[in-house]
Amino acid sequence: MNIRPLKCFSQVLVSVLFICLHQACGADDDANDDANYTNYSWNNDDTQIQYWSDYSILPKRCIVYKGVDVIVFSMHEKAGQQCSDEPVGTYKLDVPTFVESYLYQIEDNAENEGVDDYAESANAQYLDCTGVEINGEQFYSQLGCSDTSTAELAVNIYTDNTCETKADSNGYDDANVDVSDIAPPFQKCVG
Image (cartoon, rainbow, N blue to C red; front, side, top):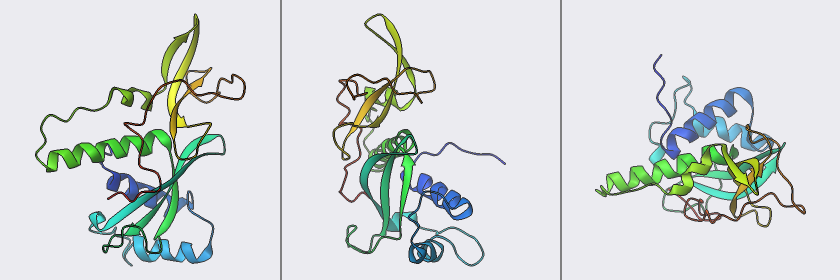
């Protein structure tokens, strides 16, 4: 089987739904929602929805869940309601994966609109765990949730090269880097 890298939001959503439906992860525990995930996400023969462009997502907030910075988002059928309808489901995805998909979607949209000089932000480097030197000491940085708002992202500082152990300075682990150019629009419908 040849596996392509995920590029667009819709491809990630398909993957999230596949994982969630088969491993019961990332969704609200409400029994009614569980029934809705199956009805909206899969046909009786286990095939996926054909047109993901018929859906929108609503990034709700960025939180730390079981020690991992995640973006909580809901998926909605478009039908001109711009995420005002009842969501198909609510999911969570780690910040780097969500933002990478968001950036790929922006790039894909630019390409579809004939924009040929699209350039990804330099802040995309923070999607990966990257070594940085601060005051002569080795640390690592990666995009995650802000310490001050659930509707903002920040570059977090870590003590290990896997970006799992956050460095703490007076209760904060954020670097002073403006990443608003790569942050999804929280509480605004996308798609």
